[in-house]
Image 1 (cartoon, one colour):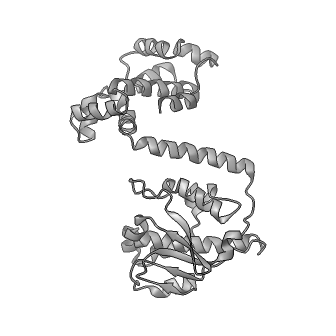
Image 2 (image 1 turned 30 degrees about the vertical axis):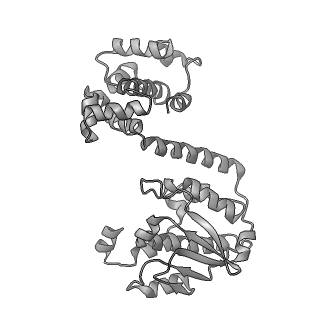
Image 3 (image 1 turned 180 degrees about the vertical axis):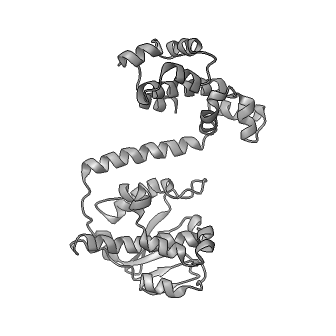
Length: 304
């Protein structure tokens, strides 16, 4: 965003981006966040927020909250990500307010999304304050102790349009899968797997190679994997197993090509490994789609 501001010579770019581009256009968070009530929506946003905004240290989790205040209610963004990144706060708050207006317009006024009565920012007033006033149109406080939008208390009793339950269940299932993938990627095993995948076919899928990429000693990587209950050899073997099923069953890759992609010395070595994993030959799987072989989604859950 900072580079974009420089290239466009537009200091208010983050603010304008939030006002014009809806969250549903850029993240599954904007789709899965549909809820019957604001409080339910807040719970969903907190659960899936890291799919859109992730500081890498868990800071996004359960950090948006409703705080009562003198007969009103504050929607408080408590994460330090917002306090430390004013551009993020600008775009998030502009998107929050403008998406509410778009929802009201889309329903022909049937659903009236309340407008905030005031907005507070922890950062100092910027040079482009006029854009803030134009977009928000409510009293603004800069240098506040919190990043928050202040609403009338009836916000909490507001009923939102019911989402399509079938679509909602599909989106939630997808969001849960993405969340699991993100959480796994933060483990040592997850990081090792992500580094192994692009080099499997090169024959360099060795602990020394991965340790070097992680800027760790071989022994340190060994200890970290051991702390997670696995060895490097197990990670490599199980990753090959998962990918083999995906290539053969899901992506319809040939047996010989799969053998190459997984870094086996020859197709015979791959066939022996595959039979050890599944009890069947890879060619049998290709021709019969053996239903006895565990689906890749179950394998992933088992290993993760």
